[in-house]
Image (cartoon, rainbow, N blue to C red; front, top):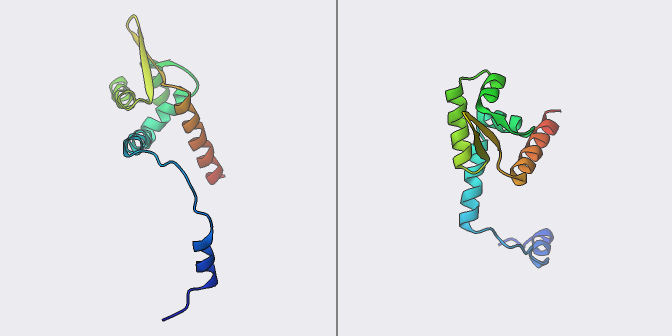
Length: 117
């Protein structure tokens, strides 16, 4: 039988980290949000919405996609709580649902740019 290394013994003697773990419900909800934003086409939509509210027509034009395709992506993002919508006459406008979504998107995009650069 071998003797435990000094490093292993030292690792067992330090004060353990303490944190309040997120509940399973919160972890599952966060996983859903990340999955929803994890699709490149939906992420492009979210990135455009970082600049402010847009109508579906503007988004489709900017992305070069059909309005029905963009609407379907927005429907999923809205169902998952990442975007909000408002109707004004015949136009439907979309925006990020809150500042938390914007902060996560900015952080993720900045980190990706850093890794690419």
